[in-house]
Image (cartoon, rainbow, N blue to C red):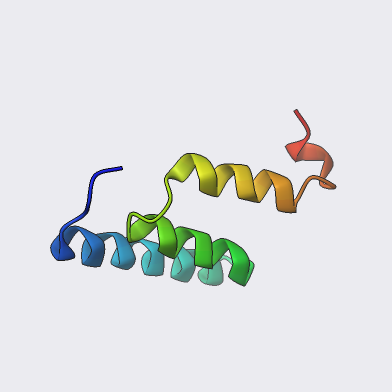
Amino acid sequence: MAALTEQEIQHNMRAVAHAMAQQELEGLQVPESTVDDLRRAARGEIDTDEVIHNVYRRFSHVPILQP
């Protein structure tokens, strides 16, 4: 995974903040564990595939997310 510049990280972190704000406006709450994963991805620590994998793992009991 390529290292991100500080400018890219700040851009990504703003995108995460905006996404969370949009969810709140819609009356939804994103679990803190998912927000943490999104922030880690924004910093380049993990990739989005890992974020998606973690969401599926955490919510494996939700029928709509069943493969």
